[in-house]
Length: 146
Image 1 (cartoon, helix red, strand yellow):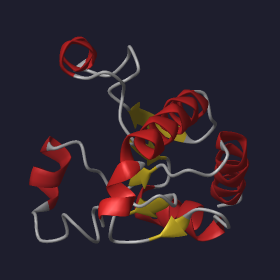
Image 2: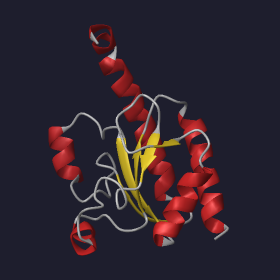
Image 3: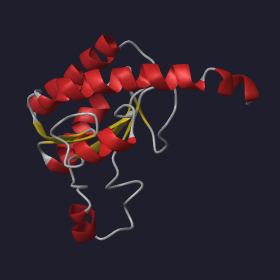
Image 4: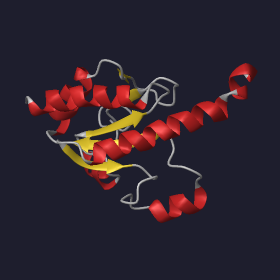
């Protein structure tokens, strides 16, 4: 564990750079309803994030069109990015919070939190940013095929 801590800041810096690139890609991707990343100026709490954070972090939340069906089609098409209930690994992971972390919360309460049926949480890892974007494009192709 101590050996892993020695390189933690380097890994998080790289993952954060990847997340910023991915968030920018997602913001203009077809089939996107919303993108939430504190490092983007369109985030509702961007000014607060700028005061409190040195970067936008490693997590990107986004909503795809098509609700739960769209989210599952999107995630199932991914090859490099794994589906997981856990986030925060050095590998890129996605989860559907409506059926995992927030499944016990009423749909109205989830919606108030900004978690809709098409919401996906993406924990961006250390893979090459362009490889991640190419994988996300596979998800959008599956979404377009619905």
